Length: 177
Image (cartoon, rainbow, N blue to C red; front, side, top):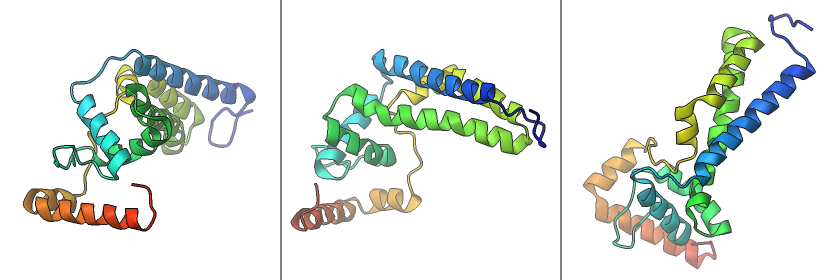
């Protein structure tokens, strides 16, 4: 059946969407399990591990790792629940990568008012080699709020004190640290 926006809506379309998302998942999973690591993945994995243990990405040396703070906080619950391993640290990136691939269908369909355009965008995203590689990495290249970077640069000791105080309050209130 042809819809008003010119798209094809049938069971075949839904099967194709599911098949492409499953393919996207397994292509990313294959790279995740291949144990080929990017140059700075171990540093960001350590930050995520420290976030899981201490509640903040503070290295054992006391240095705050602000470069990949969002990735650290997203990965920390996985490491807390499932224990540390390189593969577990990469799972949040894989899941976000597959959701990103699915969003290509939605955005492509709406942007061009055409479901076939959405399917084309979904196909390209599912099979794009660079997206596969980056979806399977624990990548700290995220945007950190400017105020946080400014404070970390100009008032490092004050920021660390505030983070430690917040961790202590959380611990005293019975929160997980």
